[in-house]
Image (cartoon, rainbow, N blue to C red; front, side):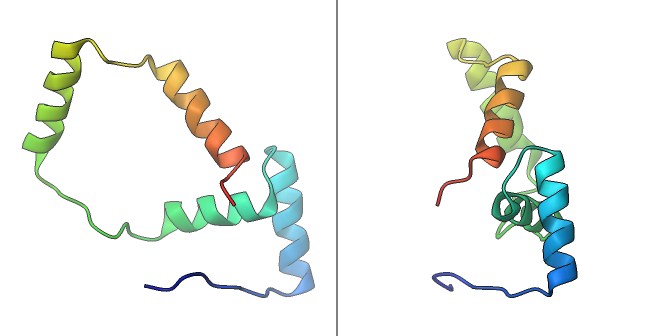
Length: 84
């Protein structure tokens, strides 16, 4: 696995990325990361729905569910302020 990667893009693409990021309140780096995450397959995906059901049942049993607006706000904050 790579420790990191530096990507250089031409001026026109850089400007488009900066404008798009500014429009949605993200940094260009944060937007690039989000686009890569959204467009590239994850490392591993377990298609077994039983795992999802077990997670949901445990959350219901322990009453440790988080309302969707709170989850959404956390995700938006994470994408607007990505970790360095």
